[in-house]
Image 1 (cartoon, helix red, strand yellow):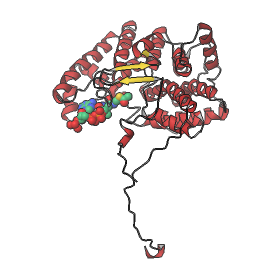
Image 2 (cartoon, rainbow, N blue to C red):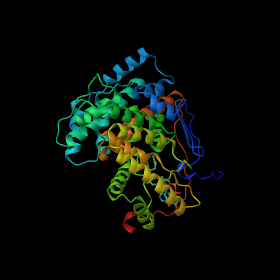
Image 3 (cartoon, protein in one colour):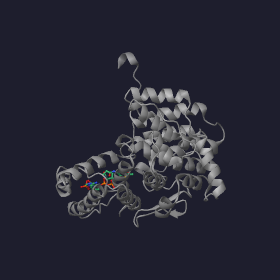
Image 4 (cartoon, rainbow, N blue to C red):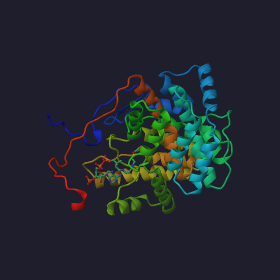
Length: 377
Ligand code: ACO
C-alpha cells in the first residue's frame, strides 16, 4: 500500500462541510450561522442563536416564544442526576467532571430516538447541572430553573439564587453567543465522531465535555483572571509581563493556533466587558484590563518579533465572566454552557449526511517478533 501523508493532529485536513461557522484566521473574521460574530453576539438572545444553529434561520416572534418555552420545559434535572452531582461536589470533583457525570445521569430522563428533542434537552440541562454543582459545593440548596427567565438569566439565577440584573444577563448572553461555535475544534469534532457511529446525542455531549476539559482546549481563562487581579493591585502591567516572559512562560490570553491577528471574539467581548463594567460603576478594573492588553502586545512584539502574538478569546472572557458574577472555577463549564449549542447542531448536521469517522494510522511498530511462551519471558 502507498504511504499516506501523515497529518498529525489532523491539522489542515478538511473532513466535513458545515453551515454553522467559518473562521478566517488571517483576516481575523468569524461568521456564525451566516452572521459576522459581532452582529450575532450583540443582538441575539441565546435562544435565537440556538434556534439559528439548529434550524439555519432566525425564528419569528411566535417561534421564538415557543422555542423558549420548549427549552424551559427541558431544564429540570431528575433526582438521580441531582444525586450524582451532589456526590461529585461533596467528593471535591472538578466542575467539568461533575458536568460529565451529571449529563450522563441526566440521560436517564432524556428523550430517546428524537435527535432534535435530545439536542434541546442537552443544551437546556447543562446550565442546571453546572449551577446545581456550584450550589452543592458551596453548601447551599440548588435553585430550580425559573420558566419565566431566559437561558442566560436562568443560569445566573440558579448560580446565585437571585434574579440577575439586565446588564449581567446581556453580558453573559453576549459571551454565550460569541463562543457558541468555532469550526471543527476538538470537542465539536469529538461530538461528531461519536454520532457518526449512530450513537446518541447525550453520549456525544458527554464525550465533548471530556474533550473541552483539557487545558489545550477549554483552556484556562482562570489564570488570566489571576493575572488581571494581580496587575490591578500592583498597577504595573509591564513588570508582570516582563517577569512572565523572562521566566520563559507564556502569557495567558495571547496567541492562537488559527488566528494571526486579534481574535474577533476578543473584540466582541472587550466591547461587552467595557459596557458591563461601565454600567456597574467598576470602570477602574476594565481600565486595568485595557492597559494590560496594550502593554502586553508591545512587549510580546519585542519578545517575538517574527511571530505576531495577539489577544485571544480567553483574555476578555475572564474579564467579562468575572464581571457578570461567574465564579472562576466555572469559567470552563460556562464555555460548555455556550458550546453545547454548537455541539448539538454539529451532531444534527453529521447525522443528516452521515459517514462514519474513521481515519487511518501509520503503523510504526515491529513486524517480525517471535512469540515467547510466558514461562520463558
Ligand atoms: N506568550 C509568550 N510566548 C508565546 C505565547 C504566549 N502567549 N504564545 C506563543 N508563544 C511563543 C511560543 O513560545 C513559541 O515560541 P518558540 O518558537 O520560541 O518556541 C512561538 O510563540 C509559537 O508558539 P506555538 O506554540 O507554535 O503557537 P501555537 O499557535 O501553536 O499556540 C497557543 C497557540 C497554545 C494558544 C499559545 O499561543 C499559548 O500557549 N497561549 C497562551 C495560553 C492561552 O491563552 N490559551 C488560550 C488559547 S484560546 C483557545 O484555545 C480558545
